Length: 105
Image 1: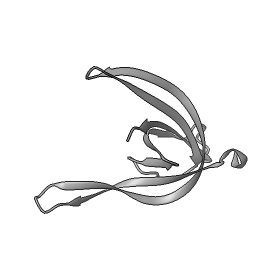
Image 2: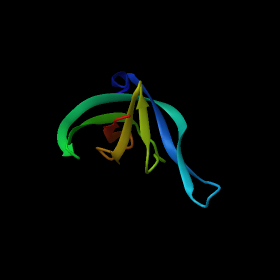
Image 3: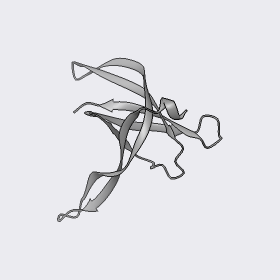
């Protein structure tokens, strides 16, 4: 598995702070760098407000993390991947499979 984790990604978790008007502001704070294997999965097209929207999903494999954030983003080069689901595929605590969607900027 170690030889397959060749891509460097940054793990970001949300941090919510109060603003001056009583609301909240969510920012994404860098947690740590990870080595990952990234495989494109599905490409889907939908129409939103008369425009074509394309969503690319990826399967990202990383080493197992005991306290992986519930909401997270991965930054891979100039791409931002929103983590939709995380699972331990064989329940051995060796790796995590992350289903991610690419966020368009």
